[in-house]
Image (tube, rainbow, N blue to C red; front, side):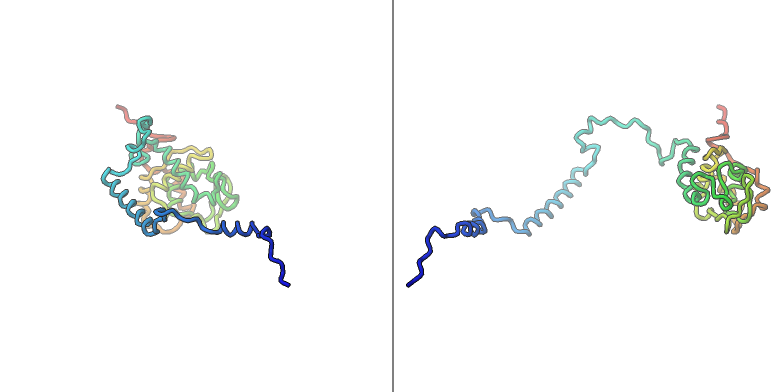
Length: 238
């Protein structure tokens, strides 16, 4: 006897629907996507056309192309030529010197107090506030041996290195002006011309100074005008 046939109601409707969902929808004639090479070519044409259009129209400029340009007021502040033109020379030197002091801060510390027994303080130091001739020579060629600062003895291992070859005359002058007018210090600024004058006189020297050699320059100042800051030269009478 043959097995009874399956009843039509036993058909798995969910299985049939799932198979139908997997079928891709028929595309309408004329709606096929463009080939990739056509899309790429369109991008190339757009880039070339945009470049040519920019040249022909004078290029994009925010001042002229900005749709809100008419509502923006002109900047009334005067524009300095060269960045520092018109600025107070003393304030400019202090600002630049603060950045240049980074090469000194590792030894003399950010607070200018140095490290006891090794690196002398710059705050209140007679070496900093004394003659500019001695101070420029120290930084230009370095210093070796024992020195006394504010009544305390210091003998830095290897001495203080020379910065003359690593810093321009202007940068060195800015740093020296900064240390002479920071941490409560107050003294005349040192100019680039002063540094250049000392460099010229000591151009043949290649060794560090000692305290005894610099004793003669303890109170000597390099000649030259003081353009601004403490002790600035009085303006000429008109």
